Length: 165
Ligand code: FES
View 1 (cartoon, rainbow, N blue to C red):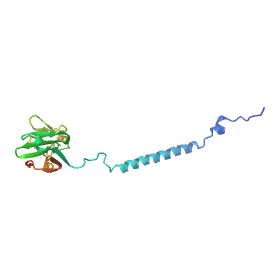
View 2 (view 1 turned 90 degrees about the vertical axis):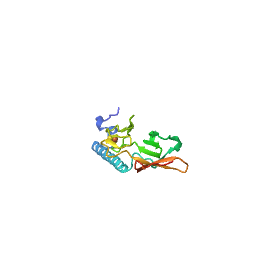
View 3 (view 1 turned 180 degrees about the vertical axis):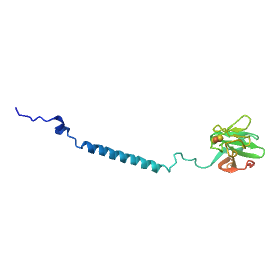
View 4 (view 1 turned 45 degrees about the horizontal axis):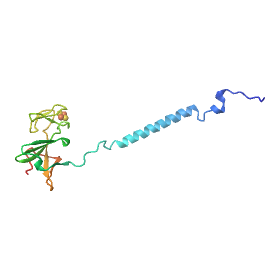
């Protein structure tokens, strides 16, 4: 019988590591550092890009004039606007609170209250109680060649300006 040399298991070639332990920890630290750097750079590059894209255009249609009765006030919920029609014509009152932009709610009395910090506005939009710094805004109403009414949220107008129809 051939005499086989007995070696301890740890010295066997089969269990010999290709990368010494110290080098392995160094490589792990190096690649962790590189990975962290890549994530940081990607985050920094993304910062200038907005997470929410603004609505395109500031104008929106609210339909034909005959949709609104004289003396009516109609809330356009998805636009946060109240369309007012009286004998003089059309006005559009923005329900966006002038404090930090929450949506004001109309009470039965006709006044408006902001649910966020409690600002109160009278039925014409004037501030009755802060912290809102200024009245609710009236927005320009115009008419398209098709006859549809259009509100422009970027064009505030004086409260008494109406679109006569
Ligand atoms: S957002 Fe309306 S009171 Fe603050």
